[in-house]
Length: 84
Image (cartoon, rainbow, N blue to C red; front, side, top):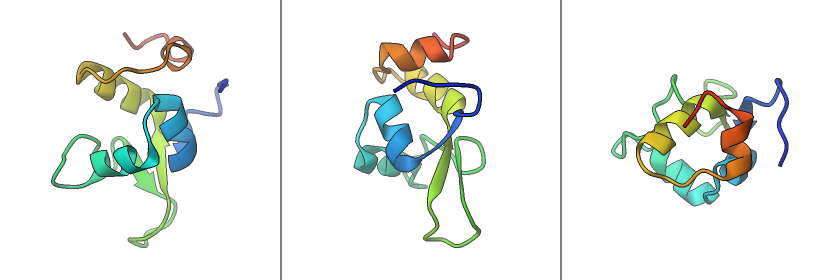
């Protein structure tokens, strides 16, 4: 997957691929009881409805998941070079 400046906000399937995790894991990390990826900071919904699709802020997610020890694919890390 390649990135450009417009691809910092991705849907769940594309964000999961970029982060090297499954859709299920990504959604699990968004649950309120998990507290890993927070709504409004790491992701938001396309509309205000509870079942609307999520949009992920990829640079913020990469920073957080890297800090927590998740493996982030090299291509994703280099695309956001401000991240370790």
